[in-house]
Amino acid sequence: SALIAFGYSIFAGLGCWNIVALIKDASKQRIFVYITIFVTLAMTPAMLFGTSGQLHTVSYPDSWTKVNETLKADPTCKALFLPWHGYYSLKWNGGILTANLAKNFFDCDIVSSQSVELGNITSEGVADPEYDYIDSLVTNNEAGPATTLASLKEKGISYVIYTNDVDYEDPYLYPFIKHTSNDEISLTKLVK
Image (cartoon, rainbow, N blue to C red; front, side):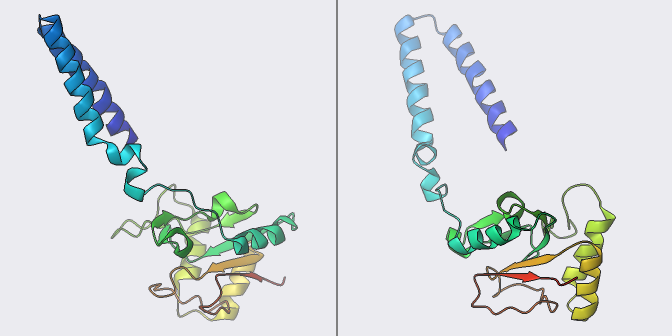
């Protein structure tokens, strides 16, 4: 999207430059420039004032910070982040569809979903057999909890972080962890 907008801005500028060059009268050139600036600004009031409320700052909940403090204390931390979605609506962000933020927030090696969930497009990025294996473990609602937990431990995962942001619509049950829909975020340590 940024490249498209950049292209539009370059070619719009070049187009206006050429139109101004074609106009011989200096006063008409100024009028054309003023009209162009006015039309450009008139088309973008939402962008100038927060894109109609779509862009705003939001602080992470205190519960996320508490979980992160626990993870920071473990130097060999590797955590699985649930819900297993690449994009989902965060309750504390006004329900706006957001990319999975776990890797950027937690001070730990985070394993989180890369799924874009667009038909047959299941993941973004390079194919990784280890990720695919973990993905199959997490998304399998039929596997026994003991088997899933043992397999996650084999992959070096020592924690499971779970947030209840998509409880109401999540197709995955995560039978390998215990959680309640009241928990905003929970941290489960996998005993080795």
